[in-house]
Length: 134
Image (cartoon, rainbow, N blue to C red; front, side, top):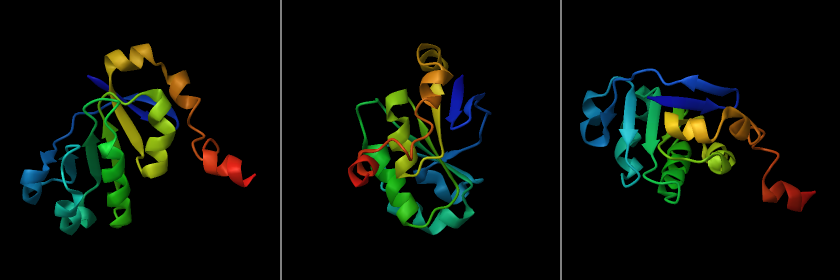
């Protein structure tokens, strides 16, 4: 099982029928991207997708951040969700690059409760550029 993290807190992750990039032509609105996928392949389908989940294999691998940013630059306006062992300290960065939510395993949610994530929910106020401009 897993937990969805948003600015509002935790909620249970619903079951989804999703497809990997290799099967995008058969999608039903939900696409799963690996951290190694090239998002340009998904560009022709972006207008039909409601949710794109991008996997993080480890909290130390940030390639999914780049994929999320590129999808937003391509004009994707649906929900972007990071999945995997993302940690609470990365939540502000995830939101800044375009993720709407993070899906984490139950074990991680038990170690990093909602309060730790909500502490970073004001992600627009806690970045170094804002402090430099002040």
